Length: 451
Image (cartoon, rainbow, N blue to C red):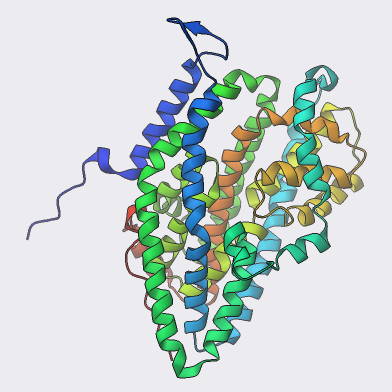
C-alpha cells in the first residue's frame, strides 16, 4: 500500500507565512526613509508601499467572517435537540472567561510591579507633540465606551447591518435569534438547515481561496511595521516589551498549560496543532484572520459545532487574555513613567476597571490601545496624554496580544467541550496528531444530527 505523496515544503502554508514574515522584516529594515533619493528616484514611505498588502488581506478575511459565524452558530444551535444546552454552555463559557481573564489581569499587575519598567523613564522628554496629537482619536473613542453604549451596540440597526459592520457580537446575537426561530419550525427546519449547511461550505470554500494570499499579507504587514517604526522605535520601551512578551509566555505555558492538563491535553501539542493560525496572526497582527481556521480546527478536534460556534465568537469579546495582561502592565508602566504613585487599592481599582473596559471595544480597530485609553480615563491620576509613549510600539505589542488572545480562546473552547463531555482526552490526543490544513477550510461541515 503506497502512502500519499509528501507535500513539498514550499507549498506548506505555515512555512510560506513564516517566510513572508522573515522577508518583511528584512525588506522593512532596509527600506529607505521618506525623502531619500537613490538612482534618481524619490523613495515612497513603507506605509504607502507595503501597508496595502496587509490591509487588503485582512479586509478579505473580514469580508467573510460574519457569514461564516452566522452559518456555524445558527446551524449548530438549531440542530441540537437539547435547547437547555445553549444556556448551560454559555454560562460555563462566561464563568471560565471571567476567572481566567482576572488571572491574566492580576499576573500582569504582579510582573509590572516586580520589573518596574517605567522607573526612571523621562516621560516629558519622550512625548513627541506629533505623536501626542495622534493619540487624541483613541482617547475620544475610549470616552464613548460606556457600559450602556456597549450593551446597546450589541443590537444592530437592522438584520443586515450586523453583517455590514462585521461586529462579532451583533452577528452572534442575530445568529442565536435565527437559530431559535428555525428550531421552532419543527420538521420544517431540516431544509433550512440544509441550506445553511451548504452556505457554510461555500463561505469556508471562499476562505480557503483567500487564505492562500496569507504569505503576501504577512509580508506586507511586517514590512510596513518595521519600515515605518523600525527596530529602533523600541528604545527605552524594550524593557516593557520584553516584560510583556515574557508575561504572556508564562500565562500561556503555566496558566493555560495547567488548565489544558486538567482537561486532558498538552498545551504544547495544542500549540503545534494551531501553528498555522498562530503564524497568520503573527504576520497580520490580527486574531480575526485566524478565526475561520480556529472554527474548523476546533470542530476537527471533536468539539460540538454548537459549542465551537458559541464559545469562539463570544471569546473574541469576553476572553481577551493578552489584552488584559497588556492593559495592567501598560497602565502601571505609564504611572511609573510619569512618577504617578499608585497604591495597592488604586491598582486593584485599576484591575476592576480593566475587567469592564476590556469588554467594551470589541470590533473596534486598535482595540487594545482604545481599551487602555478607556481604563486610564477611569483612573484620572495617570495623565492620559502619556498614552503617546506607547503609540510607537503598539504594533509590536499587538502581535503578542493577538496571539495570546487566540490561544486563550482555543483552550477555552476545548475546556468547555470537555465539561460538556463532547470529547474524551484520548480523542483529543488522536485528533491533534492530524491537524487539517487551513487551506482545507472548504471541506464538509461536521455533521450534526437533527432530531
